[in-house]
Length: 129
Image 1 (cartoon, rainbow, N blue to C red):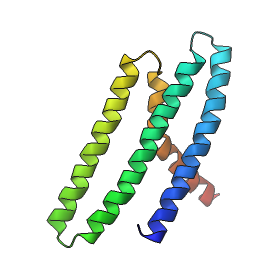
Image 2 (image 1 turned 90 degrees about the vertical axis):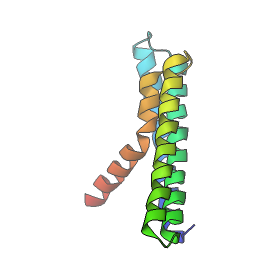
Image 3 (image 1 turned 30 degrees about the horizontal axis):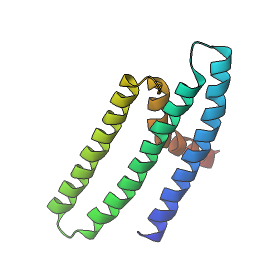
Image 4 (image 1 turned 60 degrees about the horizontal axis):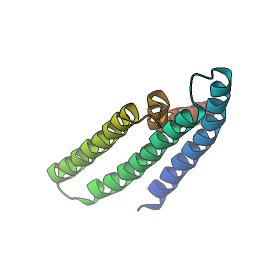
């Protein structure tokens, strides 16, 4: 993997892990304030979504590098599109799992899945300040 792409990917993944730790603390506080939400379900849902989001970021980086290496535009586009479908199906499968299995909270799983967007947005916001 290209050094710059690898550094960016690692930076986002580290930010997502920090987001996971902060989110875990906040979800534990929420479950203490509102006992109807189980602490374990909230935390497991967050980390399930977070792990899939990290896998998606790594897949994006690998797919981007593979697409750039291909010479023809059509092959690169088809390769990238295939990776997009895989990431979309993976996210959908995790959301369905969270909805069906009682050990995961659906909303905290969705929060974990969008953690990469939140981390990137906060990172850009901090750079502008």
